Length: 359
Image (cartoon, one colour):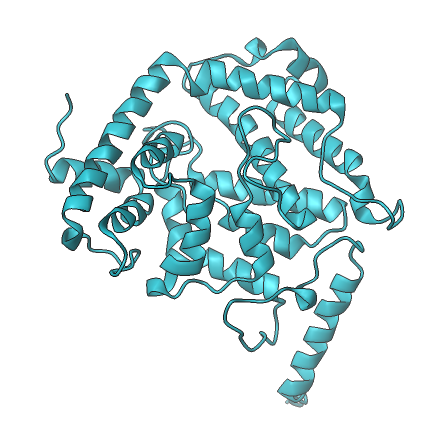
C-alpha cells in the first residue's frame, strides 16, 4: 500500500502560488500593467489565493449573465439563419485571441488584455450597430455601447451590485470604441494601459476580417473584389490578412517591450503602409456591406423594433421584469438598460408579443 503523500499547509501553498504569479508579472515589459500595482476596485476585497486581480476580473466577466447573452446578439447580420455567421460572442472570443497574441509577443500583461477583450462588448444592444444607433437617437444624452458595457460591469450585473472590477479593466472597456474615419483614431479616448490599446486595435482586426467572411457567405461580395491595396499589402485570404495585421502591429509597437529602452513613450500602432491598407479595407466594408442598400433596409427594421420597445417601456416601466435595471432610475434609463440587455431573438419576440406590427 502506497504511503500517503504529506499535505503541505494551505498557507504555504497559497503563498507559493502568489509569489510565482507576481514573479511572472515582474518579468513582463517595464511598460506592462501589473495586477499588484493596480489602482484597485471600487470596493476593496481580500485577494484570491490562486489568481491575480486581472485573472479574477476575467473570470467574473466569463461567468456573467451579460457575457452569456452575447451568443444571441448580432454582429452585422440581424438574426441570421445560418449557423456560421459571427455573433457578438464569437466576435468577442476572436478579439480576445488576437489581443492575447499581440500582448504575449510584446511581453505585456495577457490576463489584463484578455479581461478587457472579454468585457468590451457586454453592453452592446441587440441588432448590432443598428440597435445602438436607435438607442443613441432616443436616449437623453445619447447611447454608446462602450459606456453601456462599463455600466453593466459597474452597476447592472449581480442584481445591481456590479462585478467590482479593477480600474484598469474598466478603463480599457470604456475606451474600446473607435471612430469610422481611422482605424487608429482615438474615438472616445485612449486606454490608459498598453493592454487596453491592444484590445482597441485587435477589435478592428477581428471585425474587419470576420465581416468579410460573413459578407461572402451572404453573397454580398467575392474575396477577389477587395481593393488591390488590401490584397497586395494584407493578403488574399482570411488567415493571411489577420497574420499580416497582427505581425505589423507587433513590429511597429516593439518599443512596448522595453527592449528599445525605457526613455521612449510606446504606443500600439501600425506601419504607415499597413495603416493605409487597413483604412482602405474599412472604407470598402462600409460602402459594400455596412451601408449596403439591402443591409440598410434590414437596419431600419431593427431600429423600428428598438424604437417601439423603448417607447413602450418608457410609458410602462412597471412592466419591466429584469434584474438588469435599477428600480430607482428614471423610466428612460430603465427602458434603455432593459433593451440593451436583450438578445436579437428576445427583442423580436417581445416586440411582436407587445403589439408591434410591420408596416
